[in-house]
Image 1 (cartoon, protein in one colour):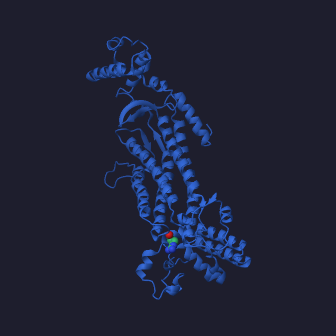
Image 2 (cartoon, protein in one colour):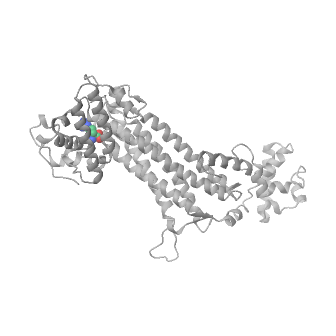
Image 3 (cartoon, protein in one colour):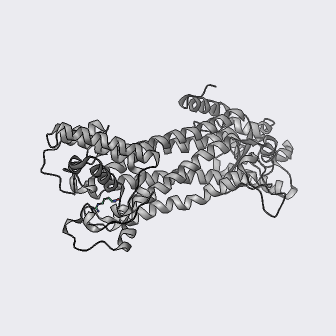
Length: 468
Ligand code: ARG
């Protein structure tokens, strides 16, 4: 709910002003329409601040109790959707403080003792992002679990691995799926790392120089579960590194989702037909009755521009700012909120969509024929018989050229034909030329050999708490 504007004498900073603020200025500078979502964290921070003020004798116990009670009531009111947000009070901080003072009188006016909105907004944002980091971690785990379940279901299924989107070497589908588990694991680690640097308590920096009042920052940090307090009040009020890092984490997550989405789009095309996405996660065409379109992966891919755009926007906002706080910094939250909403929705949908998709095992295997995908295996075979790799590469290249001329596969050549290229080739070569032989031979650590992939899957399942 939004209310009518008021005169500037009613503004919390109105004392030195003779004129009312221009309506255009109020409209342009208000952030309440998006920073209202910080209300729980703003109140959490204010409560911790009030308790500290009381401990330090800066307000009385009675005043502190009134503040805490008032804030609890305001929080419930906002939660119920009954609180009236006033744009002329600019932001969530002043909306809540004004409502508190209206409600409890002079004690409310003491809440802002030894505090500025400059350190307050920094605190709120850090508290908010800490919670969001935890939610992101949960969503990332869900996506990883979906991949691990698919890997288990399709263990043993072969498919082409690609470089340059050209068939390269046969791999296990499970290996391909587990590659995404690794990507999202790095995302989890990155978010956890970013959370650590976010988890530092800024309150007490005040406007930017600290305060002469006898506050106790460490006790506030402890109450709010922060690991440390920020070291320099000037750095603190001008710092948005944590928000930038957070946006970078979000960008990489969305990038990973986008790469997956690209594969889902390709794989569901008739040309590939590797996957069938459940009807519930596809849409149709308004004109072509036969169409079933992968709009969800397309949208996820498309929204990547928006998330990386948010990162670029904040980088540019911070770029030319002199120390310390500048109002430019108010531009930080909307970008982060939008990116967060986008990434969270994309993660949740990806997990659902994977859970409702089926792979076409026959098509995947069929695609491993054609493309000479075991050519490297043949070169390695010659290397094992002591031929220098570069020479083996040349020999196999010439064999491939012959196959191309004849329009046949490596396995279609006879032993005698192969031996014309090198006498090192013997009857056991055909094992090496088969798709399964190729896959199973790749037992180097991290390779696609069945034994390696089985180990990797077990490790992943254990770390994700999946019973196998
Ligand atoms: N709404 C402001 C922001 O998001 C809060 C801090 C405003 N401080 C100030 N001195 N105007 O950054």
